[in-house]
Length: 259
Image 1 (cartoon, rainbow, N blue to C red):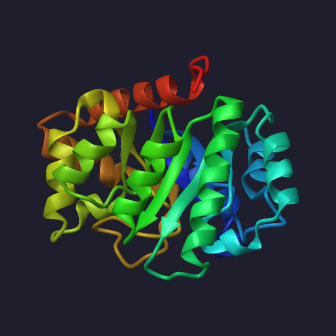
Image 2 (cartoon, rainbow, N blue to C red; image 1 turned 90 degrees about the vertical axis):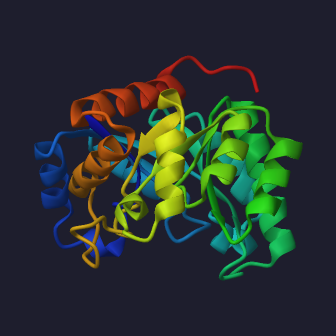
């Protein structure tokens, strides 16, 4: 059994064949998928929940992506607090900082990031982090405002960044980038990470793994990432499947710890 810990099946690119995509995932052994609830940003915060309510195989997250931070209002945060109690919501995310595109002002991104960490702490939920060209600021914000667990989604750093994340009690989630020939730093991070801190994801429809690179990504393709992770760690495919599934269940499905 595999678990796709991060996908965007609400994306319009799945509108024509979403049910077939889900069936292909299940046939490939992907028993559970986490639908990230950022959607198109506020005021809609339920993109993930809508799918999770319709499909038993889905869990959902809720959150305001850093791209959409400028759309957040006090009503947004109040609604997130309410939705955090939904039985299918297992995390707050993806949240964080993105200094590559700067679609929202950096100070606004930081303010919204911090407020969502507070919401997650109050709800006893882990957080799912998006960071792009903002690693020092992201780590500093976490160090100053967070005392729980979480995921570095689509981890793209090297061993140094991995050690920083691990020291903060975070899990590293590896996606299609792991299979890219030039991703040596990411591959080394995946090789040295403790077995009890690794997860896998697709980030579908983005970042399809080799040999699917350039295609629309989908959860069934996570098999390729799992194979690459097994190769890097000198483990069997079955061992990686069991390990990443157990890690997911421990992080998301165990009784919450006080933040």
